Length: 406
Image (cartoon, rainbow, N blue to C red; front, side, top):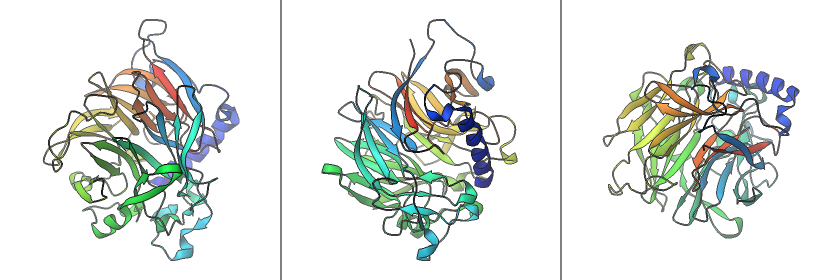
């Protein structure tokens, strides 16, 4: 995905952003609300339906995926702050390109990944911390990954590790799905690092290959978990007992790397997918959004999209004209996408957007001017909740936005 281009653009953009004072978290970023924002939607200032954007919670370290639990509280995956242990010290297989060596942390309550929960008061409470966290080499911007997604099956909380594994400087913990127990305990139930090593995809991206993968999204459907990896490009199924099955080798269906990231399913309830009853061995009708490449190969117009997974595992395109999709959600039968940045070619801070998806691009902008948004969900109150300032910000600068439409 030409990570070097991404990293250089990100470092330059963040330097300018921090210099402007926006990164201090004392004010809302840029322009929020409907607007023309790079061709997305129409101006509707002051009219009924104008969204309201507010800061719901602050104090997160690289917040990523989020979901509401059965207790109606918001659970947030946090990437953490990286670490100092070099993956090269353990003779680990290294990531290809300038990402290596990674530097990781294990059992570190300060730098480690976390899962936090937020109630109506907006005050975060740590559910589990000291989870693995890692960062790329300084040459690639020290980009952090840790816990990337959270999901519930019943009352049991599960998380997805993206910053673990030997290649990430965390030799004792693999990337995988973990189950959260009592009093902040946790246990890996599915070793996705080992599964990928034993079951390579058809067309790995050799330029940016990550031995332990870059797992971004996971949702719970029909009593199982469905994680997706944007680097190897695969969609898998994990049972509650930890059995892993590859459902779709996405790499085999596209000539070039597309970077599948976001997952959603249409169904009743704010968790989605509750109405899917095709049995435990079928493929649920998931929707997948993609990040897309950076640099000249991305072109000059928005060209990322959304695909629906068919029963045979084939992906059918349902929408295009999007950019850098990191979140998908259904509300009222309509599909919404979270774009990290709406500028083709590379990330630009303050250009992230939440849009209603149409077949040929956004049909309506719900909120624009977002600064590196990374996760999206719909709450039981019908509002959108968005992880923001999710890449490259100092400790505690990540936050959650609440976006309502009237």
